Structures are given as structure tokens and as C-alpha cells.
Length: 323
Image (cartoon, rainbow, N blue to C red; front, side):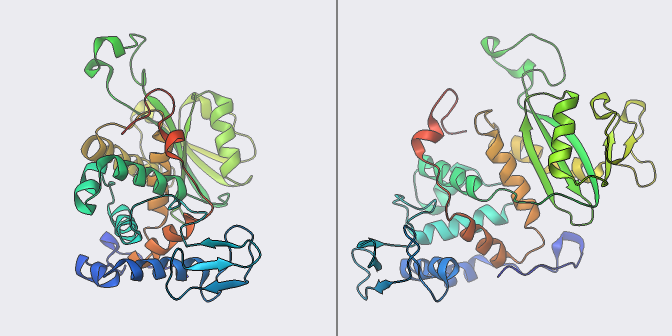
């Protein structure tokens, strides 16, 4: 399974990557990709994704599907019960898409994926959202020293069309608010979109993600005050202070910097409707960065199981398509 490593080096030079040549040698055809997903989902013991039975008949022809469940009396493949179910995209292209998704630090756009995989832009957009839905961060509560910070994501009011402007103030007006937490010891991050920056909201996020007794560092935003049950240190950004010995939130701000470079340089727009998935993507990718590339791919290949995002649900509502 995915091996962890504690080695540190600039540029993650200790990690073992996969070149494009090696990638295409790994997946020369559809059958190879299909068996790769089967191995990581089931290993040596295939189980029915519908009923969990191991009374399975393997079909040599692999048609109409590779496996037959005796109790269910139904055929099935590795796609059933995953984000791949009902997808017409070959599994070989899914594997290559996972590679591009994991190795693109600032994300990969649906336009690039559409060109690289030879699928429509709509299909590429849907593929990326399904990967985001499945491969978000799955961190437990943090116990060590954590940095907490909030940021705003969205276009500038001055750049919006007249009928889109709120004309309601400055700063974060018209933007979505995101809060994040990074544990220094593990270098793991968790983040989410929030409705507001009021004290109950920020304190609630901290309580959900950091064990009582943990050390919490924030800036001097008033909503962080009166944080009970934690060792709380603040750095006074309001007076130009950014580091006070060990008290700072530079790690969390570095995470926001990557997210915002992706927003401006790769995606250009992250709609409010789908922003929570983009946040899951960047937190999830950050948390896998210590792994070799193959182990990052395996992690994502296994998390697509028991996760479904239907196209109709994805595009439903206002502001739903292609962002």
C-alpha cells in the first residue's frame, strides 16, 4: 500500500516520479489499465460490489463484463460502485487523467485534459470534478501545533460586469470565504468553505479539526479571541507583525498562495457552486505530496470506490456548468 516517508528535501527530490514514457509503458492498452484498477481495488480476492460476496466466476472472454456474481446473478466490472460507473471513457484514459491530476501542483484545466486525453472538454470537466469529489483530504483530528487562517476566493469587484457587482463594500465582498488548518508536525492540511467569519464559525472549525489541548496559532482577527481549551498564540498582522518566534501562520499562507496561483493561472474562475471541490482537491493533493507518484495514483484509484457524482447533480442549479 502507500508508503509514508519522513525525508525532507527542497523540491521533494527524494520522491520517485514517473516519466511520461514510463506512464505509457505502464498502461499500453485498455486491458492493462483495467487489471491495474482491479488489483488495487480487490487484490487476489474479487468481491461483488453489490452484495460483497466472493463467490465470483471469472470470465475468460471478459464479455459482457469480466465477473459474474453467483448470489446476485449479475455481471460486473471494476467500474461498478465507483466514480467510473456509467463512464464511457476508457480506463486507460482514466489512469492517465489521474496521473495528470496528481502531478500538476497547481491543478490541470479541463481544456488541457481534453487535449491530452482526446476527450471532449465537457467530459474532461466532469472527470476532474469526479476525482475532486473522491480524493479530498481525509485527515483525522490534529493533535500537534496547528496554524489556522482564512482567505477569500473570487474575482475582484472592480473587474466584474456591472450587473454582477454587489456594491456592498471592500475586501472580501462578493468572494467566498475559505478557512484552513495545517498541522506542523505532519504537514497535513484540512480546509473548507464557510458562510461567514463570525466567532462561532471559526471556533467550530477549530474544534472539529484540532483536539483540545493542541497549540493553535492564528492572526489577531477578533473572531479567534476567547478560544477555550487550546494553547492559543496570535501573530499581530494588524501592526505588521508576521513572525513572533514560533508563532506564525506562514505554512497556511503558503497553501493559500498555491491555491490562488491555480485560480488565476490555471482555472481563471472557480464558481461558488463547485469551490468546495477545488478546496478538497488542493488539500488532498497537498497531503499526498510526500508519497512517490505511483503511491499518489494508487491512493486516488482506491478512493474513487463507493463514491459517485452524477452529472445531473453536478450541473443542477445556478452557475453549474464548466467552472
